Image (cartoon, rainbow, N blue to C red; front, side):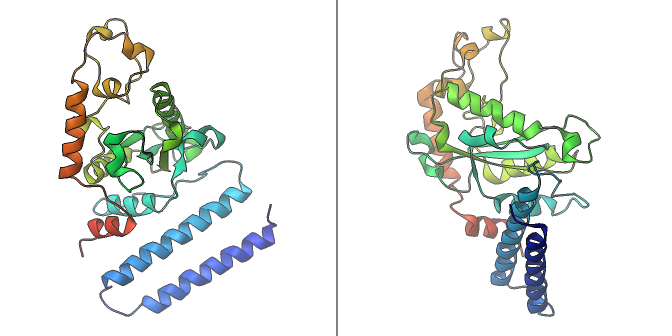
Amino acid sequence: MSSISELLNDMQRLRASLLGFVAETSGSGAMPERMGKRLVDESGLLIGELHRMRERVSPVRMGSIGITLGRSDSIAKFFAFSFTNQDKRPLCRLTEFPFYGSGVYAIYYHGKAEKCYRPIAGTETPVYVGKANPKNPQAETVEEQGQAIFARLKEHARSIDNARLPLADFFYRASPIQTGMQAAVEDFMIRLFRPVWNKEMKICYGIGKHGDSAKTRQNKRSPWDTMHPGRKWAAATKADQIKRHEIEARIGNHFKSHPAIPDKDRLFKLLSLE
């Protein structure tokens, strides 16, 4: 582990780099698109380095809430910038790195086995966006929020694994945010990315189901469980809501109407209105 003095030197270097960039760009009037992109890229790198430095000295990952929502007009865009500047993490290694926090998360497909999802494989378009509410509704720290996102991702990983989908093909991003704002941010992210596993798209929803009672099993099987059978309680359901071939057709049409966001450059352009 690095010494405290080495970490302090690293922080001073990062601070000097940021101040130098601010001095270089100040007084230039309206910021051109290329300069705005550079600001996002460099601040994203800085945020990433600071996160890594914190985790080198703390046993608790994501030990603070990185986003507080003092105003509502543009915060969702800021969240999207910050969120996608994180590295994606492999879902198959989720339990190796437990963390605290409630907020928003996204699951991404990077495989080739599922033909339907190949149009978004390895892109900035997630297959699913979700939120996790805090353990304490008045939580002000991630510790008070509990391991809400972590627990939710564990459920999804178990469902994916039970469906015999290669867990190594899936990655995630997760970000604790200010308590009470998770629903608004989730809504924005769903409208931005239109993930096919979210119920709002009315295509392949159902991964978020926790398990049906014997009475509920009389209802029809969710499209997600029709596409990806394997959860025992879903297998006991008698009929499908939508047949598999129709779900596959809807997924194909969806990606034609809403092409994947291939990279961060394209995402930046979508989020930039000025």
